Length: 309
Image (cartoon, rainbow, N blue to C red; front, side, top):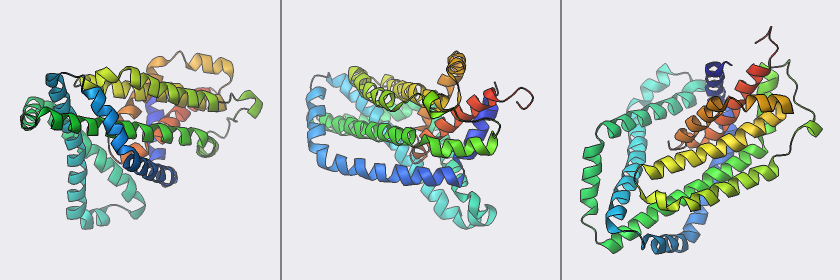
């Protein structure tokens, strides 16, 4: 199966204006909704977090606080670097990059900046971690407890945004997936509606189970690195279970779905790649579309007649 071809096509389609336009029209309103919800529910949510954090030993709390604060600093540095480059080199960018390609260029630039700061953080982790922990040593327990509660509350509302965007994209998947299918794979027809499984109930259950698992693994959110690992794995599971099956249900008959599901490495690979992209600010608005389109190309390339594949 041509996995690399599917990923390259998915990147090209995701960075196309048609997908970006849909992503902005869905992602921005959802972000506003959850920011408003956070504004009104913040005292209650942080209060619950502080109560749970009260059971955590100070040494663990300090280590986790350093890790979480380091992550938020990383996000801020990525965005500030992007802003500085855009401000200083905007005339040059406008001259060298075609107007219809500037959005794609901005997203790729943001990804490169995020990758660069990630490599810097990993190569200098001891220094970064030590310096952040020194700052945390200035705070008494009550202040640090509140700080970590605020960070964990932010993570909760961010997960709410990711889950709600997943629901919206899954519900509207037919329109933009059928467009790509008709354009690139006209020889393949979508399944009849009676042959397509309804994934609405399954999708809602997957999202509910996602938050149940997040609650069950809550203690691990206080362990540096493990909290990031748990978060990425849970996102990947949601993408693998809901996105892949919902796309396959539109085009692959039951026997083909069963055969495709045996390629777990590919399915999980796309899911983990998308999950890691969820960590990059701004780019995360596009990640559900990337996963959907990647699965679409991978499935339809495989389903193409042998002489056309």
